[in-house]
Image (cartoon, rainbow, N blue to C red; front, side, top):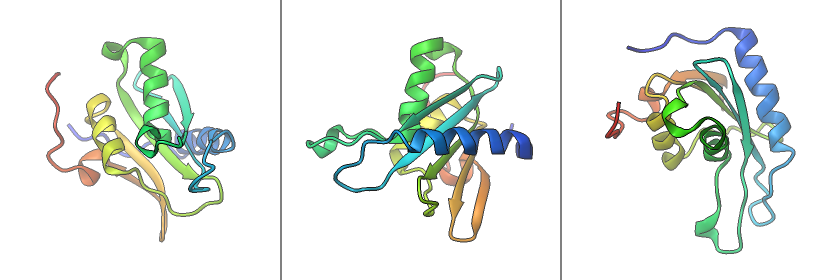
Length: 138
């Protein structure tokens, strides 16, 4: 079942929380500061930012930080993403990377993903960004 788009109020709440999180990002190597915020189906909001590391493979994206924060608080079996937003601190277009798309799908197979593209803010179903996503459970 595909979820319809979320309300403007919900979108603005997530974009504001993501923008606030972007100000906390640690990106000394790329200088690409990203924040993310997610809304669970139960109405809770969690945010996160990207955190880079000298060992580049250990870097974590903002979307995964937000999701992992929700899991840390609620437990993995209790996280169902309704919507998730990702923003660049300076407003640069910024869609979730492939790894983040897969993690979003794991916790929100009906999630709406909000991001800024070259043509403005987009709200798309995760299946549009990750067709045939892989998921072992639920």
